[in-house]
Image 1: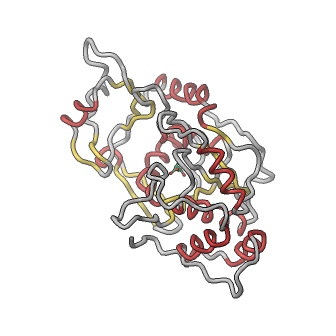
Image 2: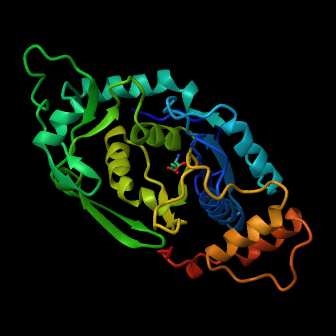
Length: 304
Ligand code: GLU
């Protein structure tokens, strides 16, 4: 299943990164950290940086959030290449990929309810591991609700630039996972893999909450014959209870009126060296940041 490309890269070795917020609320400090990490890494490598609105889950989309996020990025001096890709416009592409995975026997319809999945599965790294009830076909009288991807009984490993070698046994730790949800929307795991490939992304810098998702994404990339990008998972900004900040909670929104304050706070969070004199404006910040960026200084985990 070849990827189609939105933009031709000048050369195969060129760096192309991205920031992929979900428009579930205004940008918060945690997303600013992910934006800064991915943007500065692209700048420092003379690469391109794209923005993608991950609004595949339309049930979580908040009116106006997408525009507000883009305004905040602009106020902070981020400059992205090309158009912002919106997942909500990519449904036919996701359908095409789902169809191919079904036809090739890599995926299957699942008729189980959430309650049945929980009752028959066992605990995994992210909730219940599906018992595989519908793997051999739907039980009589059942209709397919979700579509699941069949996972191999083998370890999938990758080297994260910050966390080093990471391995996961998908069958034991995650199980056959949902790639099209029961409500008909493509699941994040599928959409992110298809979009990264179609946009020619070869460098993914994002929050460490997605470290555990990466082997699932690599498995999909291999099935679809898509290249696997290089990954760097940044420390998460946690609230006082030790939970990841969420746009939906409207926690720690970033102010458009003090961009330098926000940029420097995110910069410090990533343990980067302080500028000798505070930058006068965002242009000065970015001109300095692109040469000061040192990913080796980032600490993999953060304390609340
Ligand atoms: N949309 C996800 C988020 O806002 C990020 C997904 C990704 O970077 O792969 O947390």
